[in-house]
Image 1 (cartoon, rainbow, N blue to C red):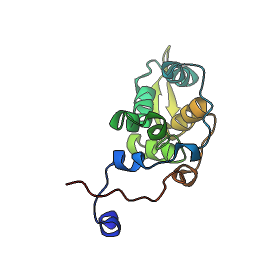
Image 2: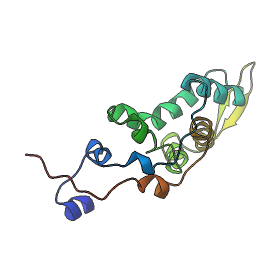
Image 3: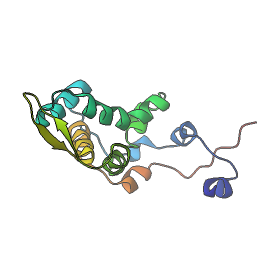
Amino acid sequence: MHVRQDLGWEPNLAAWLEHFDPGKLPRAKRHRDAPAGIVQAAADHFGLSESTPVQMVWDMLILPTKLVPDYPEIAEFLLFNSVGPILSRAVFGPPRSLPKIGGGDTIVDFGWVAEGMIVSWVRAIHSLETVLRGFDGYVPKKSN
């Protein structure tokens, strides 16, 4: 409602990303491994008997790239920042016990998993403020 009052309309994610200056994004130093390697590394770190729980964290972090496929590098930064770990804890809950390979359990903190994945992928956790500096403030005209 606040956005609607300020802008006179409710822009969708694609409208905002269309008016984003990617040159203002922090430089991402991509990991050499494929995303599957990052997911497996997280599962291996905890000794998890299956990677599904950490795969769900990765899938959430990259969700903006699926929602706005025309802007993958910009959309990626929407959760690959300080918001990602916070959102992971909110979505997946507090640390919990999960089965380990060979028996027993290990405690997994999904916020920490997200943090590790972000650092693995872009080599840093930037603040949301840093990421949002790319928005130019332009308000697109409402389409009919």
